[in-house]
Length: 314
Image (cartoon, rainbow, N blue to C red; front, side, top):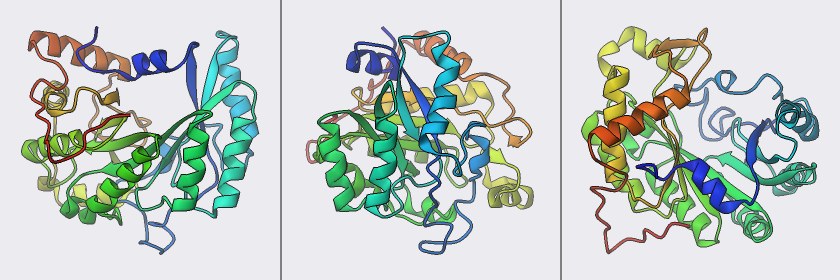
């Protein structure tokens, strides 16, 4: 038993076979880039740093899935796959065209379900109704990029949405029986240890199925890289061992039923300004587990449910 609820075990409980996520680029935009909500996107964001080489919006969903699956199928012929709509805002278009993209992915051989990454201010009711029906037949996880639970920070990093919108989207999605995930960045400018643990307490009371954490990565050619060059005092610099203890402090406050998918992310070295830890994700995960054992702690050790709020986890 791991000292936290991990994503691999969650998938093992959900499927009778092994599954692997395959990223696809749907060729969609973002309301924070086209002027609907703002211009230039979030100050930390450069989608080139996490999109696989085969993911291009000018290729069909099927072509991308074919390339992505080919890599795993040689070694794991019985593997099934989850089409992961990852780049930009994957609910930001008219509902009909979005459904066509999702259905194209679901029709591809050995695709067992979808993971759809989006913003909390981009979930219209008609699309949510489609997702509710889909979730009764296929695995579906809607993953909302929150990044912070503090409105001051959200404004500072040009997110273009509020914490109230985040909570509303999560609640509406979970209420329809859909697996609901969130993404959070630890170490955003202006946020220290106290603010980060407050995130954990806030998220612990929401009906989340999964949560992704990762360290703030300063990426070249982003507005945040300029902020860092001009105002380094705005940023908290964590050594890896300090970050690991921060993650564990966070986990202690988190609802023990929330599935934690990851603790760190890796951007290509040529894009990365800081932090340069040089460790793979699985190595950091092993270090988190070892440190939790040393501290004799576990996810939810300090969690206290607020009886005035719903903390039902799908």
